[in-house]
Length: 367
Ligand SMILES: *Cc1c(COP(=O)(O)O)cnc(C)c1O
Image 1: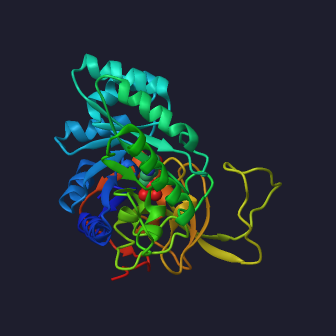
Image 2 (image 1 turned 60 degrees about the vertical axis):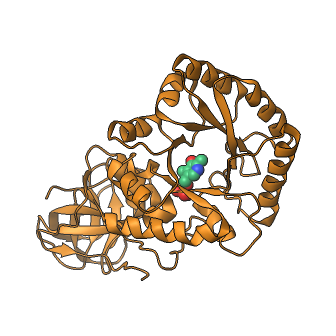
């Protein structure tokens, strides 16, 4: 099988999604499955829906369009604010979009009218992480405006934490969200269908036994795909952390001095790996690099050390020779996964085929 590739174990993705859906259900919280790290993979999306997610979310309209083309009919939410240049596509592909700008919302209203559709609006609230969001004091006024625009439905409000500044979802910011929901519902005389309490970083809070109030939705990507919570990147108990594996192929393995010689300046990607006093080592190159993934986000198998990376080469010390053609299997973190799934050079393999001798990562399952 060709390399580099990402091997995707759909059964593990399914298990992770179903487990989180079942853990959140007693708290009255449904899951929007976020597919952006998989380039909007219809296979992954279908698995999430089979596992019981309420709908799907993606940050890219291109990915939502790919899901629609593949025949996915579930509710789709654009979870990044729409670009004005893509308004018509947003309305055509997404049932709902997350929004913070009245100007954009007005354009969505016109585009929805032109396409004879009703488009749902989730207003995102800024609760301190300083990425997207309307300031809390302004949300009610914007909600009122949305209510006056034709071809739109005020579907709900949401927030996003822990992405830009690492602000932890907890009692304070989440009860502020609850308070806003109550204020808007009372003053506008309506019930918000969706109160979206954040991303995977909100799981700890939602499952801690805290009062979750009106929150009835979480938008989950990383926790489903990699089985980890993003605040500390700890494995979530009972979930698989190895549903995705990045596989690369050895193209050179030669005994060399461990220290470079000649006059030294910058490397292709900045810092030079510190490597002193190791004598001769067998240096192995696998054919994967910055064009394929984030090399720093690849966890190599036990006994293998990453010495450096450039566009197309990942240099390893495996402690022994690995014959050309040997496959080395890495566990990607979120950044490495996103880059691998979106690189045209990386094949996506939905079966865990192992046709050749493989060096396997020690990272196992939590269950
Ligand atoms: C990426 C993203 C998510 C999903 O985040 P995870 O940490 O992968 O669960 C949710 N909401 C928004 C707005 C996002 O951009």
